[in-house]
Amino acid sequence: EAAVTQSPRNKVTVTGGNVTLSCRQTNSHNYMYWYRQDTGHGLRLIHYSYGAGNLQIGDVPDGYKATRTTQEDFFLLLELASPSQTSLYFCASSGGLGSSAETLYFGSGTRLTVL
Amino acid sequence: GDSVTQTEGQVALSEEDFLTIHCNYSASGYPTLFWYVQYPGEGPQLLFRASRDKEKGSSRGFEATYDKGTTSFHLRKASVQESDSAVYYCALSDPNSNNRIFFGDGTQLVVKP
Image (cartoon, rainbow over all chains, first blue to last red; front, side, top):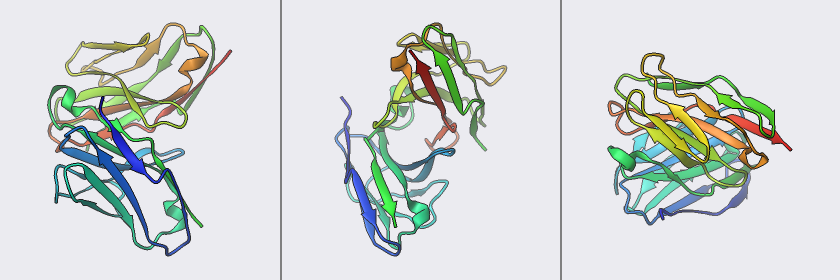
């Protein structure tokens, strides 16, 4: 069974704070993704990566950095957090193009509150 | 660009009602289409997928048929249960878009006993 683990589950910070969200997958997948989920907007792609050291920009990248240190680990960084970044964040992985490899496997989410 | 449109933001039904959630898509290539389901407190999970025209995907009593002519992939279930209450996302993967997955805005299904 594919596994994607996010940490922490909940995080509270203040405006201007520095936050790192972590994601590890044990699926041997090439692709990893960071999404944010907000009421009325569904899932919006922030950044994604197709391998260690690679980074691709998604649809809502402003205010976020990301880094893929290994095939397993993908981090989302908020260096100057703002209240508009209060959201539920999901990490996901997939094998890539072709057949069932396109299926996304999601973690359980990190709820971030910026005061 | 690629996009997915779900018409219904929220659907409220009673148990044993018939469900339809509409999904239409726009893609430059020949996409694979998905339905994901998200239960409270969890991440989305794949319900089923379809890769070619006229292919029917199905799981747990839900089904949808890939229709290239009308660019649709509507989700249907003949008789919903309270346990089906969740958020449902239609999505596509376009081989012309570098393996990006495009999601609709989601439909909140509430089933009353």
